[in-house]
Length: 242
Ligand code: AMP
Image (tube, rainbow, N blue to C red):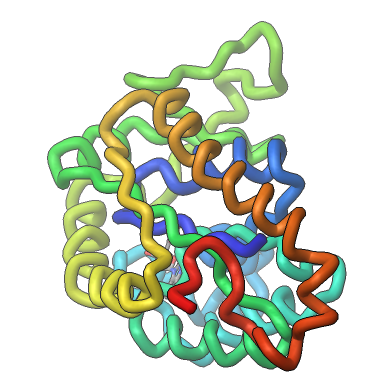
């Protein structure tokens, strides 16, 4: 199953993706993580995008789409990707559709986390990431349990774009460019809205219940999928309108 986890910056997409990946054996494709990796490495691409990422604006579609194609075309990740932070505008959504079709895949569900700007400001200003394992914490809502993990204080880092001013800019970018993507997926009947302001475990349970249904459905349909490929080329599944 392929999933899009959707919502404004600081909605908890990364935190929830990390849980989902483990439970459902998926691969997390976070465009933000891929870009930060390039910045950290100081690669040619990294140097080119540093300013844009740190300003809260979007990196160009060409750059992002080619990062995505590398992964969608990889057979190891076929139909087991959770897209975190992508697509972020309509042209990326259309590109993703084409790419998935080309590689005989589709999106099974779009999980949308709804969170207000006030909560986002608090979440972003408290966000810390472990530089060893990549786990995300929040100094106010979800502090690390130092006894069990590598995530000691000295390894916890803030992201360069995690301050309130940039958070507001990123939220505005989200409202202007990214929210219209919802209509695109609403028309395909794929969007499930979830209140992203409750606790991590409550949100996780709600997401899991949707994913369990899809996984169960795919389990039933998969043996027939290939046999009936010509009749039902792509739009099979519980969200199909056919
Ligand atoms: P994130 O970690 O998803 O909050 O992304 C951090 C920053 O990376 C964003 O503010 C953008 O500058 C850039 N970025 C991440 N994903 C995309 C995308 N799909 N399209 C354009 N820019 C992106």
